[in-house]
Length: 266
Image 1 (cartoon, helix red, strand yellow):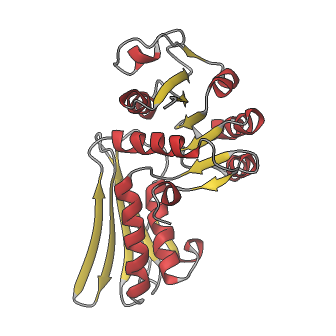
Image 2: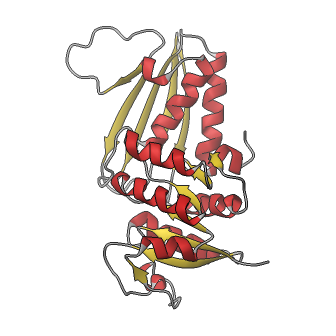
Image 3: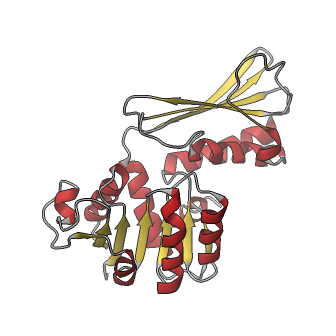
């Protein structure tokens, strides 16, 4: 079996290093290269605490796309639009794990999907995507007597809140109820807020330490409460899922895909 060449954007960051390790674990994939703003010229293996790979970190994103069958992006929202354009122009499968995208960046990702396969997910772990399916079903079965609250906690370095995964779970709950999340979302309660609005979905975001990611969806009803929880022990679960998505995407038709399709849950 030919090795799929996978490029890693932001390879010097925590998720980028995890993705390098996840690619190196597999026998059907190879590291095509890595792009970062620091550690330029250093071997990508050494960046990730691995043996030398003979491939060095550069700041040439276009060359990385051209050298890769698929490129994985866990960087910053302001960079993702440009990377999406490169994916489209080079015909390279593109896996997007960056969260907190603005309208312009998201539009660029959607436009790239007209030309290449794009897998975009707020969370790439198998467990979280199974959780989303369970949340959707629970929300469908339980009526508005059960209030939905979503609590998440991440490490102190995370930039966006609520997390992309919390929003993924919120959208799953809203879909189960047949409503738009934007119409029923409550975030950042403070002060005299008044009574909880029936049918709304609440969010709470906690930050601290080195927590990889904890998410709990609560269905609080009269005299009983159901809680569905996922706790990530290590960000390698996200990296392995992203690599799985990259391998799946190579050779697919142009279009926008999610992890539910990659994992056969859709």
